[in-house]
Length: 224
Image (cartoon, rainbow, N blue to C red; front, side, top):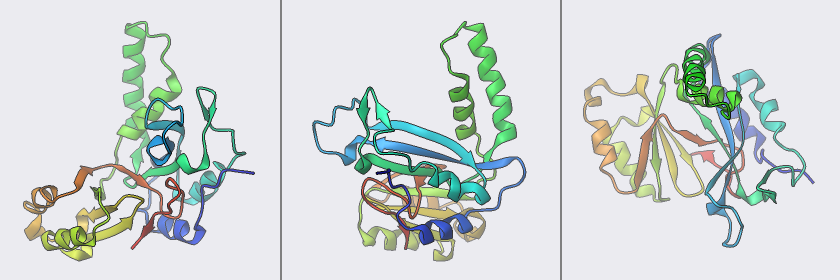
């Protein structure tokens, strides 16, 4: 038996098609996490987020790279404990990452580690962290709504033109993606503080979000 990451392949393919096209130095950053908040007490893990895999991908190779995560149950472990299926959640940065910018950031990190004689640092993890932090073109601002209440979506639509919004239903609420290029110029100075003052708006910015069509702690996120 294998872990199941892809639950709705059509929704995943539609999401990949929706993502902005990358240039030659851009790729998307994805991360497979184990979230202990999705499990019952007594699971034995010490922190909520256990990072299992992280990688970059173009749009063209993304489906197959995600499919490769579906390895045998028990292959994902933390501190010798097998990660259960219901803890898994796949996330992505919907704004592409700039690999050329990340190259420079990695070189700086390497130099600082050498200067500090930090020989235990993992160079692969240093590079992946640099990629995660190297946002390229910022197409979207993500608004994380930490409650499944359609009234909040209606309030958000009062502060922006609805044509710039893409809404994803997640396990515990919504991710509302604001397309900056489609935002009404008359609202550019007011929309952000107005939305951030709404109840249950948890965080915003260049966040990672659950991948539509894929697992999120027993739930399958989808655009609505």
